Image (tube, rainbow, N blue to C red; front, side, top):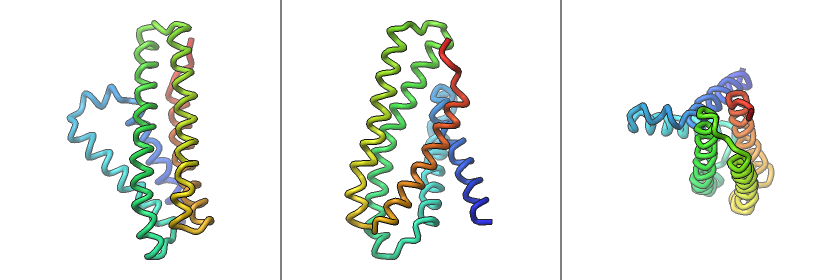
Length: 163
């Protein structure tokens, strides 16, 4: 039962996050307050999911949550880059103005984002290892990777191929 609830939560979280990332233009149609409320809700739900699956002691929690918040802040910067990349692609796709030169810039930014994402995890392993045993560091990274994989899958299904 617990696994099916987690699966449903992961899929819902991925869908909502991908909507926020894939539809940056749509978010401009809604009041900014509503989008911020939605973002806050997603963050809170994600944090609850992490808390439920980490099984932290009080001492571990005291060290982990500040590192978690810092990681989420850095991850938000990467997510913003992804949103800008998608918005740039969407603009050119809709206007049918994607040139080889623009495609090259998109490729370069995509590779840079992927490198930043991997580098971010690598940078946080020592920080997490200071406050958690290795098995719990691995568990946390696994949770983050599952969420990111669902988001990437959802993005992949939503974005049209370059023509």
